[in-house]
Image (tube, rainbow, N blue to C red; front, side, top):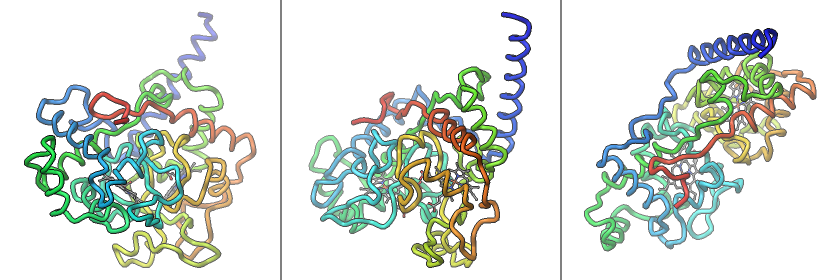
Length: 327
Ligand code: HEC
Ligand code: HEC
């Protein structure tokens, strides 16, 4: 290696270290997967995760035995829904987009408006939601207990198993992961420029913070506001606070390139649309977050940001059973 090359490499490693330190300072939790996500699970947890996976893909969780969790959280689509709005039992169509489940085990609250505190609390809600799976817990437990694989299942063990499985879903091994582990050379110049913009001029990191790219907080970017009219109260329906009108939880950006459409209402089809949306400063409304402002990105800067999001954050999807999340 020539001296100038060594100098360049050292400079890039220094930049990677300073960016990863900055990311670490900004994050509120560690990206180290929790116990269930570790590759070596103790046998009791491994059994719980395997049971949760079986339940996740089982259509007998829905009244018409047609819908499973995976119908709306498709493993081949980053555990989100390629359709703008998911279709539940009897053809019911909700008004929010089914979000990715990647990294949700690290989350602080669940749903776009954060109305569930834990995964154990969250996972039973779609089952009894009349527009999603349409069951009652009594009906479901009676049905499942007829199957030897589920014998002895209770509401608690069902919730525990599903939550344990969801907790293991993650994306790893992206260029970004290599970059922050001290292998900056995996990033192309364009991806590196994209990361610089993400952390600088485009100020995405203010909300998409830490290794999962979310601050787990609620912000109004204006997506829910259409020509000044509010379409969905969002967080305000839970807190009753005026400034939460149209605020939603910041989603993770891991594997974001392969799981559109985007936003709580699936209204933006592509990442190009998302970048244009932020570049113009979101949608105007009385409660717009102060960090959503016109960015004035050049066409080359938009391309770089796109490269970072699409290529830099594309990883391998994993679940705690050692699989890729498919049944
Ligand atoms: C009919 C479609 C549908 C089915 C079936 C479904 N979900 Fe969802 N899921 C959604 C939608 C839509 C949301 C977002 C709703 C909201 O935020 O108000 C969601 C949200 C979630 C979240 C919160 C993610 C976050 O970012 O906060 C989790 C976790 C989740 N679902 C897990 C499950 C599990 C486990 C099952 C099976 C028991 C399931 N879902 C079944 C559509 C579905
Ligand atoms: C003020 C906080 C904030 C800033 C700054 C911000 N975001 Fe977001 N982002 C959010 C919130 C909140 C949502 C969900 C909004 C909704 O659905 O109503 C979101 C949604 C997204 C989504 C959709 C992801 C999905 O799974 O649907 C993408 C992609 C995204 N942001 C990228 C970016 C990029 C790129 C930037 C910088 C140009 C940026 N964000 C700046 C808070 C922010």
